[in-house]
Length: 194
Image (cartoon, rainbow, N blue to C red):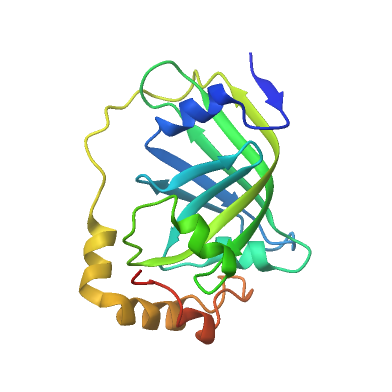
């Protein structure tokens, strides 16, 4: 049976560190707006402490998560992980998120949790956890992990840091619902080289 916690305990922390994929969901405040769910892979999720989770957010074709988190009065987010190998399990972190752009004072400290190379990184998404839940995961299929895809990395290398910034400025200004995402000025800070 599942359980609900108010914080991330050591057992969940260790389990999360072994997972290869996670999902992020957000929604605009408007009931007319589109709910967003994004799959994320790679070694880009970290538990900072028993109430804080962060992940690297790479430049992409959409900016829904950033727009929803920055929407005044919003910030709702859930991160979900599933065990695709080993015993079945699902963990969800519900809470309020914020967007840490490279020019934010917290970015330098949080980026130390990841590899030094931040090419293609648009921001760090930080979740202040209000609810942790786990459940059985009996309905999740078993898959064998083969490898992480390298397409995002190759795309970023081909574009270069300036090309990534130009892409974010032109493609990530607003969400599909017209909610502000990353401004042209903010786009100048993404894909930091150090």
